[in-house]
Length: 73
Image (cartoon, rainbow, N blue to C red; front, side, top):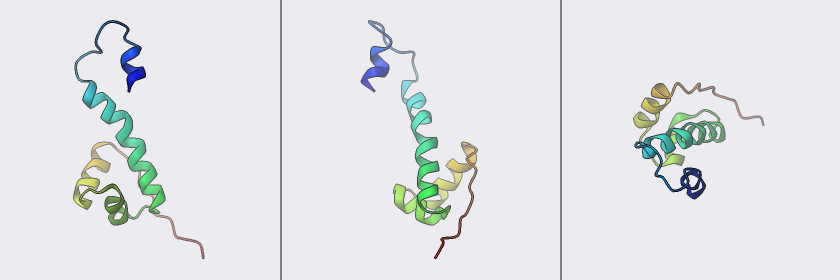
């Protein structure tokens, strides 16, 4: 985060930095959590500490592709 601010030198970054940073972090975080939970959205939501319906809303809004994988025995 500090590097992001440092890149702007002596000026502040443009307004809206909170939403920009969330967008940069949220998509990969959800994708990694979905992968770790083999695409199980209930497990993913629990892992992230959010409601399953919130996760589904974010998946739709952020256009994240969800694939379920079977666990190999």
